[in-house]
Amino acid sequence: MKTIIEPFRIKSVEPIRMTTRAERQDLLQAANYNLFALKSDDVLIDLLTDSGTGAMSAAQWSAVMQGDESYAGSPSFYRFEAAVKNLMPFNHVIPTHQGRAAEAILFSMFGGAGRNIPNNTHFDTTRGNIEASGAQGHDLVIAEGKDPASEHPFKGNMDLDRLDAYLEEHGDSVPCVMLTITNNAGGGQPVSLANIRATAALARKYGKPFFIDGCRFAENAWFIKTREDGQQDRSIPEIVRDCFAEADGMTMSAKKDAFGNIGGWLALNDDSLAETARNHLIRTEGFPTYGGLSGRDLEALAQGLSEIVDEDYLRYRIRTNAYIIERLDALGIPVVKPAGGHAVFIDARRWLSHIPPLEYPGHALAVALYEIAGIRSCEIGTVMFGRHPDGSEHPAAMDLVRLAMPRRTYTQSHADYIVEAFEELAKARESLTGYRIVKEPQLMRHFTCHFEPIEG
Ligand code: F0G
Image 1 (cartoon, rainbow, N blue to C red):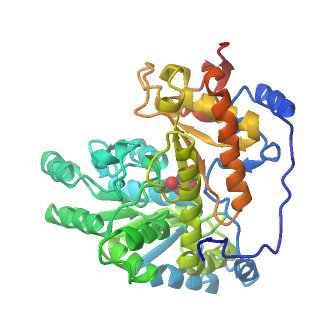
Image 2 (image 1 turned 120 degrees about the vertical axis):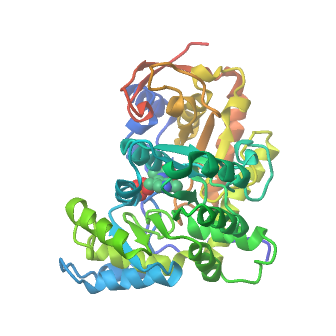
Image 3 (image 1 turned 135 degrees about the vertical axis):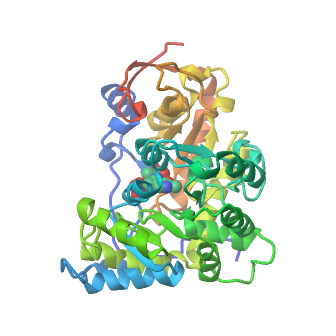
């Protein structure tokens, strides 16, 4: 059969409240045109993030009932730990309430003034934790990874020549090497197993520990299986184990590829680092057998980890994005290609080329998508990255709009509705106008700033 169906039935539904375009216009005005200020009840299809927004399975909900809330030594922790080690055989698994808490602990040990930490592309919270420690993060993704039109199969790959030169140049100031799979900030693009191995080999050559940010490890493994020579006949768990066998540790947001509404972990091989990390954990998150989580959360994650590596799920998951991208491409809408793991990215700077970057074409597109169809997306461009610490403002490298797909949450007709929304937008494209920011905080302005439309 050609049709790739959702590999699940729906047992429990959550109604969506319909709104009219006129209502949405008022809601936008009341929100000062910032989509983060909308109430989620006023959103029809919420593609703001794939983080924590997925649907749990019946088996996960029943696992929740097994949750043991003992402060120390809960069996829920041991089930969680075994599920993690089954895929990522690190010596120490330290639960945290979400990914950024694992990062904060990691960089309390590896960060610090004068240090330099490379990655294919640091996610915002990773960079935030590195910078908060006084260190600097650097992004060394391959050149194709920054070209929305390039069809390279592994656009998340580390640029190995640049990493080699970087390690040579920065020497002792580099405490570790990181790699993010998939590369969220670069369009959810995967990293090949060969590139993971080569990055690990370079880290070893220079005597640096190697850490993987594994948030979307299963999606990455699916791309390895389907795109990398010699991997087609291997199981997803085998590929996942090969990826992590290269690393000295990992950080994880279990809100992504562990099907959790909350959760994360830090895993390490080194005993003394693990001891330091656990002491930090006790101070900030909780006792090492629960981290910042309840026993029932740990149970849901243990079960989720056995479901995320299911090939029928991954085939459907990746196909949904590819389907939307193919249809948008056919409409002439510039999308980041090929399809990434967790999201569809639109090149708003190119599509709305009549709106200059400092009038925020990505934001204009995201607002119009909400107004026309009630779909909430996220600008990843000049609003997010344009303001610099010295107060100056410059266009970001790209003005993208991300449609992040929650896991197992929306169906094929939602995908068709998203495409239809873009058909409608295409008709209105030339009449869309830019925005100006009329109020902004000092840091991370995109979450709370106020906008005004620039009249055309
Ligand atoms: N690393 C990556 C690659 C991420 O995508 C995220 C979160 C984190 C770390 C932090 O994890 O949210 O559990 O603390 N990404 C979400 C997103 C927020 O929408 O892309 P967290």
